[in-house]
Image (cartoon, rainbow over all chains, first blue to last red; front, side):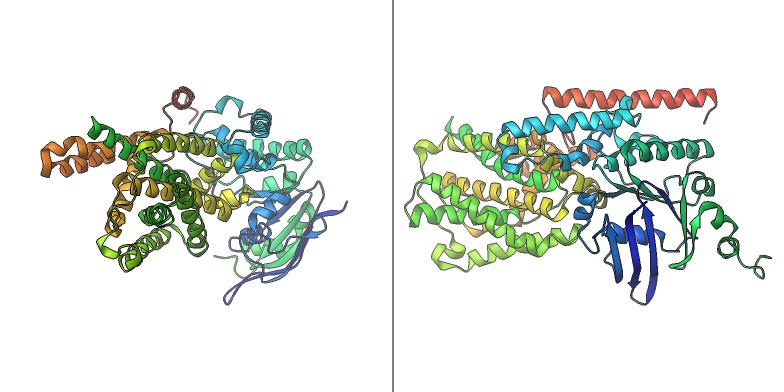
Length: 259
Length: 302
């Protein structure tokens, strides 16, 4: 299995603070890769570096063998990397359908002039992306909620809608930032199933940040552990669970256990 | 009769400028308090083309839109990186700067203004209406395209829009240039309609008036902007008989809307068959969702 995403010596400095320090990892094509670590370990910062929200201080990011380091966020999204957010960021006042319909824009190529004067290509492509959005929402089980304003959607479905919106860009790599945050065990189980299904159906690779260890252990083939911006361990889910360094980072060292 | 027609003409001219601002503020979420500046550019460029270059009025309209658009590209480069209130203040500065430049430029009349600009009464009575109708159609087509949806996405959640592959800077620039072109055209129409322009016609009060109309009509609604432009241009004229009191009525109308309908008259919905169907569907979906959660509550699942 070749790597779809490779981070080489990735470093991010905010002034004197090194948020991410020399992290290297490779997400295998078609795999579900877990990124874990205590709060403040730099997990979300890595997502922001990959997606171009932050500029990289040092190191390179390779996606499908091509460097995407420091490209503009929309260019990275166009090349096939999309993400969801830890605190859900939907287009709140738009309906479920409109959220996905908007994100389908990369499948249409008509120009402003073609839109202004309603030329044939406009009608053709609009129809195509309308169908695409409907199909996606049906696959994701949101077909009964098309007209609901995103804001009014129950929490679990908002997560689902955010993933659907990300899929509308036909990504090759999906970055999920704590998708199970605030979910109960039932919802978490549903989500685990959903992530697996999405990976198989859309032929993509998944990089997921999570605190729910059941989810990580349940679906991730490989796990990378961060602590204070540095790599702590990397390997299969089982090997990570037994790693004393990881246990120490999460539960505190021998001497500190008493508190 | 001519007086009534004049009010409608003025409404149509205001509407053209308001439509542009509706794109920028209502759909893209960028507040501007300097659009009178673009109107001023359009008015003066239009006047130069007709009075100094003796070209037909259509050329004046085109030149006004073009020059305002080009200047907005420069302004956009400088200011679109600014966030929220900072952008707003920058546009305010731009509007005032334009006014002050015109105030001190004797060739175009300076602070005294520019009198007896050639008026093309013959064709031009219907011209504002034609331009307004064309603008409504084109702006409608724009907001109902992928470019327009991208603007709304930027307004709703800029970061998520970026992650959805939207070039935020380009989208904002497109909104700004469109709004400036329309404001410029409105300025040229205004100069022709009144026959006299002065820098103080395009002061901050004018900018604020345009923004108030957009908010009054409803954020993210073309029909709201049309309604707002008609009502708020005509209202002070209708109440002219009450002389001193008319601005009180104007203010009162705006306050009643702000308190009673903070989203504006038609915030987020359109007064068209499809738009009304959509609003009804959204209401129904919301009610269904509520009923569902109530039922779950009853069963004790929550």
